[in-house]
Length: 115
Length: 111
Image 1 (cartoon, each protein chain N blue to C red):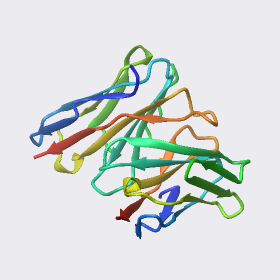
Image 2: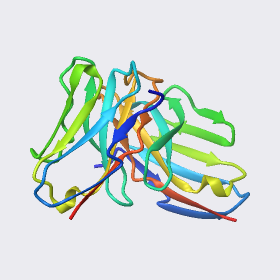
Image 3: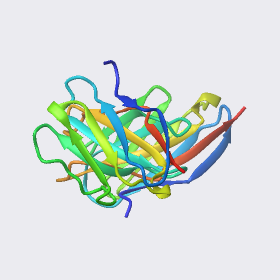
């Protein structure tokens, strides 16, 4: 597609339920990132995929969070047993890689509300 | 701790004035990027400046980088109401593989 596509745009879920957020990166981009942004805050790094390398999971806040990237393209971020503090915008981005000069393109985000 | 810290956290100016936002970082970087975010949704890449560059221009945007002070500034000249947004700096730490963002500056342009 023309840009990074994320779904759903908005998700309201009950506390304790699991949610899956999807990201379709720009075709050909080998690098994919997930960030979380709470209201009025900066972006919090969650996880980074680069090609076939092991992902950098250092930003995942707890073992309730996991992400996978199938076939080097689409990625799914899963949050198990959601808590109210998980409410935030989850932003996905992709790029050709993190070499100097490669622009990172963001999707519009998935707004998650846990009630 | 945050790699990039923007200053000020909020800035309100009149349309037509220039807006200057600053970013400081802590460790050596490969490059520094500025992004804009409208209404808490997706970020739009504005400009990238490499560690060996000191100044870069793009339209009404001017970015400077001082690696000795570990700081960068974003200047928006002749501001417009449509420039109202949050602006973030982001850095790629040398040896790391992730883009680290600051907390952002919330810019409001008053008509």
